Length: 222
Image (cartoon, rainbow, N blue to C red):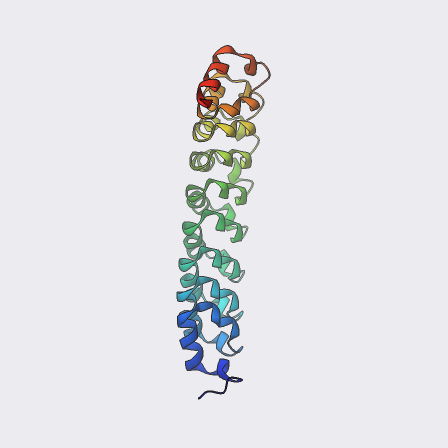
C-alpha cells in the first residue's frame, strides 16, 4: 500500500484522484503538478484545476484550451502569453462573455473577440477597450443583448438615437444612461416607459409631465 505521506508523489494515485475530481490536483506534488498527462486529466475533469497547475503548464496551449472549453473562467489562470492568444480567448468568451476581462489589452481591442463576448453577454462591453466602446456596431450588439450595457458605451454613443432606441427597447431602464438630449426625446421615452413604467424616472423634467407618456407609463405598470 502506498505510504500516505508520499501518496501525492505517486503518479498512479494522483492520476486516479484527479480523474475523480480535478481539484485534487492541488494536493499533488510539485513534480506532478508539472506533469502534462496528470494536468490534462485534471482540467478535463474540472477546468478550475488549471489554477493548481505549474506555471509552465499554465503556459501550455493544449492544456489551457482544454481548461477554458471546460470552464471559460480558467482563462484567469492562464499565462499572460496565452491570455493574448486569440484562439484561447475566443473559446473563453464564447463560454461567458465576461471572461473578456481576463484577455490581454490587445485582445480587448479586437473587434471579433469583443463582438462575440458582448453577443454572449452585453455587460462584457465594460471590459472592451475605450476604442471599441465607441464602435457603433459592437455597442449595438451589446445593448441588444442587455440594454443596461448602454452605461458602458462612450458618451458619444449614449447620444446616438439608434443605439439608445435598441437599448431601451430591450430594457426600458437603460434610459438612465442615455444622454440628456435623448432623455428629452418623446419617441425614446415612450418606448422606454412602455417597456418599463419606472423608466419615467429617467425622462427629462418636461417629458415626465407629458400626458401621453404618463398614460403609457401607467399602463405598463398595470
